[in-house]
Image 1 (cartoon, helix red, strand yellow):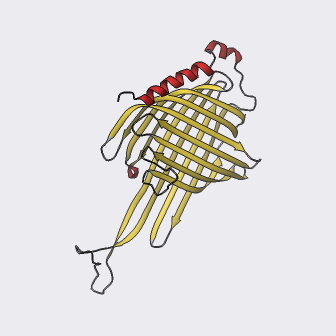
Image 2: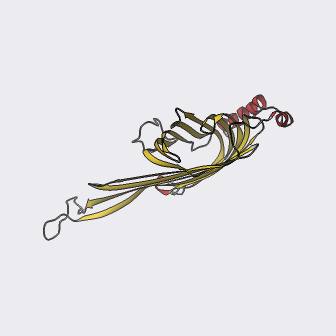
Image 3: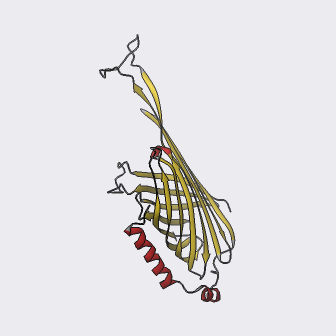
Length: 281
C-alpha cells in the first residue's frame, strides 16, 4: 500500500519529536540513572473473570489476562496476553415457509437449540524498551490478534518509536509513546489490508491509596485503511496480598465507528467486568 498523507505526516512528526526531545546516545549514556524506586527483575499478574446467565437465553463469558514485565538497568521488556470468549444458547422455534410455528403431534412447538460464539478474542503483544535516560526510551512493539466472530482471522503489527515514562513507583506512573510501523489485517470474509501506520499509546497508573489503584490505557493506530483503538479504565481494590478485585470497562472500536460510546454499534466491542487479579511475583 502506498503511504498516504496521514502516514507521511506521522513519520515526519515522529522524526521531529525524536530530534526535539532526545539527546544523543553518547550524552544519554553519561546522564542515565536507574530510578531508585524500581527494582530489577520480573513482575507479573494474572486476571480472571467469568459470567453466566440463565433464562430465555443462556449466556456465558470468560476472560483472562496476563501481564509480565522484566526490568534491568536500561531495559524493560513487557509481555501481555488477553483472552475473551462469550457464547449464547437459545431455543428457536422451527417455522414453515409461511413463517408459522411448527408443532409436534401433541401441539408443542418444535424448537431447535442454537449455540453462537459471539466473541473469541486472542491477543498477544511484546514490547521491549531501551531507556537512554531515566525518562525517555526507544521501543519496539510486536502483536497479533485473532477473533473470528469479529471477522478477524489474523491482525499483526510491527511498530518502532520513542516514549516517555515518569515513575513515582511501580504502580504509580504515566507514560506516552508514539511510533510508526506496519499493520496486516486478514479478515475471515476474505478481505485483507496491509500498509504503513502511525501509533499512539498512553498509560496512567495512579495509586489512590495503599489498597486502591486507578489505571487508564489507550492503544491506537492511525493512517491506515482500517484504524483501530482500544481503551481501558479500571479500578483495583486490594483485598489482601497478593489478591485484588478489579472493576474494569474496556472498549475496542475501528474506523467505521462514528460514536464509540454507542455500544449497539456493530463496530464496537465493549465489556464491563469484575475480575480477580493475583500478583504472581
